Length: 66
Image (cartoon, helix red, strand yellow):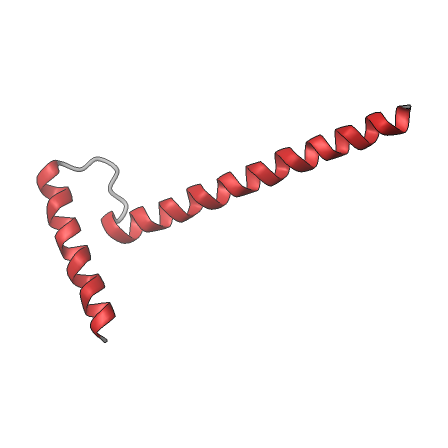
């Protein structure tokens, strides 16, 4: 019976690590997209955000056109 307990614990740890790694990948990807779009800024006004979004959209259009 003790071996089943160890197997269950190992499966639980593996599940938590798998979910944690997935969460890390999601957060890492969103951080990369944020830095690509807004740089290192964390606090943006609405006008700043609109200006940077417009510049990012132009950059993406140029990238697709090439």
